[in-house]
Length: 386
Figure 1 (cartoon, rainbow, N blue to C red):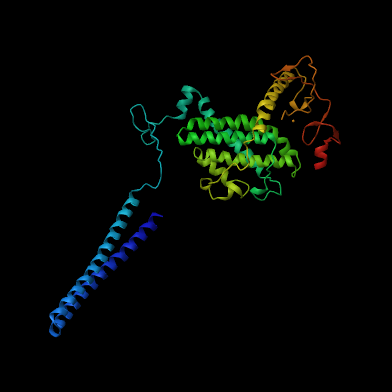
Figure 2 (tube, one colour):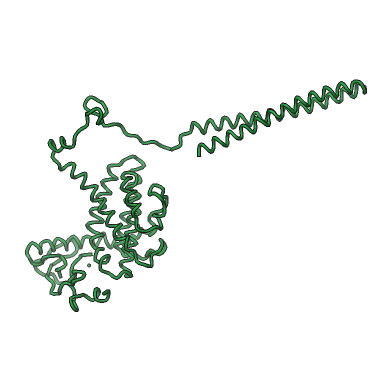
């Protein structure tokens, strides 16, 4: 772009200089012609006529001089403007970092031999500190791998972004609400060059909100529901927005991972239509996640209930009442739920409810592994799908 501007300026400058030279040449030729005419006139006409002609000649010379001055002003203005463009930086801000230095203040480098060998760190502090860094990065990669894997099998009716489901489940709105808050928080941190909280909040979202919660309660529908089911389409829509939002967050701090994921995106519409993630400039969350009622259902009821239920399930597993959660009598990932106003013995108490775990008498479906009423070893859902 700068090269095009330079070429344009040079061409314009050359044209102006040629026109200026032409005017000067015309002026000289005009003066020479005027001199010849004046000599001729002096021979043939009176002094009065000669004076009139000299007056007209002065006016013509004045016009040419004025035009010449205007051209010089234009040329000078263009030169000054181009100088301003040349000294203007091609960016708004620059963020740089210092070198890691040794105890003497010299830059650490392999050529100087003053770097710290990871083996030395392991000997002194143990391998845990390096493994923890690797594990954190791996958890983010695993989250993105889960999203790519499940988005590779879109419902056939989804051909573009407009085909995504717009009426989502409360838990979908809740997780998108969490994502939206995470993006806003991290955008603020990026603007302040505060990167540590960004990575910490991203890791917490991937582990606690996605892997341990949303992904866990969505796997059954993703893997076992009919390909055309509404619930599966709702989850796929949510995963689409989760992938877009996470790529937006990690692209400044994990650019190679972001690009690797983007190049392996299994669809080519919406945010995935550019050559690189770093060329994408769009609004990532196009589903309104600002649904206070849906968020309140999850935060004020379902999550507290889930915590109490999981404490009761853990206790039941320890007492050998059940072997797995799915044997217990769905966000809760159990076989069935009974609501009873009468309080029983041996219960797990919570702030607004109490939970008691019983082993179900139902059998395990050979396809989805859920405990349901079966027919030929299959639950009703799996039988209809097959």
